Image (cartoon, rainbow, N blue to C red; front, side, top):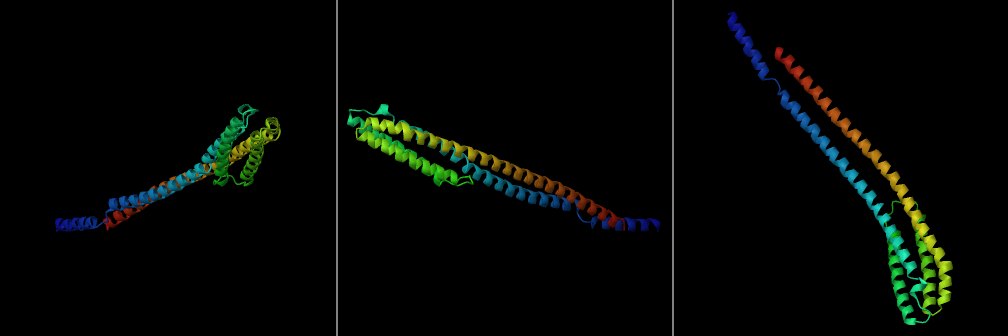
Length: 233
């Protein structure tokens, strides 16, 4: 009789145990869901960071390169008005040099226009306005110098170049340098801001990962305890 009762109790306990929830599958499912959500969130954060840094590069590195190209173009335009390239007696030489100088000035004007129309990172619109203003002034004085060369007034052209055009040239270079410095300052500020946002996103990701692991462990432990309690009844 005792053996029969023991067998019945053992069979009942085995049935309860077999009817217990599959704990390991439940915990694995929770881990997969947690890591899947974490992966999606991490992908979204990385996409946002990539977009912001790409925008930062487009609005900073490209303008800096454009400013460098404009500086070269201004130097070329100034060199094109050098008196040594012109002749006091040969009108044909002067005409050819005037044409070459006008081509250099056209290239400079395009370089300046590209900068003025570009989407700058700079928050101060006066920077591009100053570049546009000094560009117009340089073109005005350079055109006057070239007209004097074309008219055979070599001495007057040289005097005008040494006084007004050279002063405008130095002002132009100073404006380009000021724009580069302003842009570099704002790029540095924006870079630090993006670094702080990246650090904050990393903290959130780590906190989420740690929280998900702890939560799954707690849930798994609770399920195991519940299954153990049920198996003893």
